[in-house]
Amino acid sequence: MKDKIKIVVIYIAIFMLLCSNLNVFALDYNYNSYYFSSQDYSSYKIAKNEDELIQYIISQDRERKNDFKVLYLIEPTDLNVEKTRELIDDMKDVFLAEDDSKLALFTLTTSDVTFYKANYEDKDVIEIIFSPYEEYYFSYINEMNYPVVNSIEEYKNFLINKALSFKEDLNVIINIPLTTKNFFEVNKVISSFSAGRELNDVYINHIITGKSWSVNATMASGEYVIYVRSSFNYSEMYLNQAEDNVKINEILSQIITDDMYAHEKVKAIHDYIVKNYRYDTSYKNYYIKEMLDEGTGVCQAYSLLTYRMLSLANVPVKYVVGKADTGNKIASHSWNMVNLGGYWFNLDVTWDDPIPDVRGRIRYDYYMLTDKVFRRNHTPCSLYTYPKAYKNYYEYLNEFAENESNLIRNKTTDGINIKLRDSYIDFTSTGQAPVVVDGRTLVPIRAVFE
Image (cartoon, rainbow, N blue to C red; front, side, top):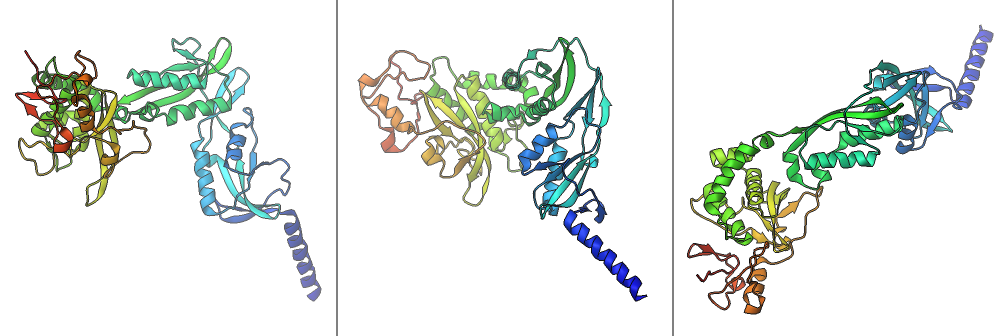
């Protein structure tokens, strides 16, 4: 009996020694159990970091029918395994293979991938085994009347131009070789494309709210190339734009005259919105249509309406989003920037119409301010780049009002055309915004001699 025990112990010792020296066991995260695997890692790809792992995956043989094995040299914690799983899952539907004359799209999901804990060079690492692809054959169209671009960079510019012209149809042939890497890059371009960020104009995000797409393959001039079927999704605000513009142009016809300069237009539009609309404390109205129909809206509705009215009045304007410090809390907010005479100024019509609403009251606390003043409680979103607002508006007016030599007598697009009743009026010393005298705004100082 003792001899049998000794033999069993010897066998166990030999077995453990072999396991220790050959690193033959791995932990299957899917089943939480040990199993014996090949100790020979010569057929494995060794990925030292995430970039190498991605490159190995997208460079796989397009005709691969066998397991693809990778040792990912990071600690096999549950968190690292889950991050790796998510990374691979994000890369699904981008793997191609070519079989004779047929083109197959191989779908890779995490169900095709198994993760193990392995030991490599005396360190615990993640072992990843990709199962053979499943093939999904699709037909391709030899003759398509799609526009053609010849590089991925041209494809990016194609999307930007479509966004600028608000075109819905984005179908295009990308005349580049049908490789796994190219297919993956094209899918990445369309999936991550944001019109607002690409054009550095957050207003566009209220027009183009999303997109749908599929990346496919076709035959062109005897070669397999990539084609993309896609379209932008447009907002309800965009669909209502024509109807809204009719109402806005009617308002502008009442408050804007042909002989007004840009300064006067800005003030007229600012004053009209402050006097005729009130802040929506129910937080229901976010867009121009609700603002026009119901006379109330949140900051987004105020700034979108300001943007649209100034644009239709041919005044350069931007829509800005960010955060604002109300004194009680920091909240999401939106406002505008206006260009006059080549200088940019900050304008927050919402905060010039504070709660509770007082009929007929107009304030200019946030009218045409510099960044230095405005950003004490306004912080624009860092995803977008905005022009600098450094010029003090009232100093700007005074520069043209101090002496007659500064006056521009002819009508100009920047709105600087001043005829003086008095030799000099100092806005800065009074601290007051431009006011209306005899039905005309003093923006800049203006008195018309008939």
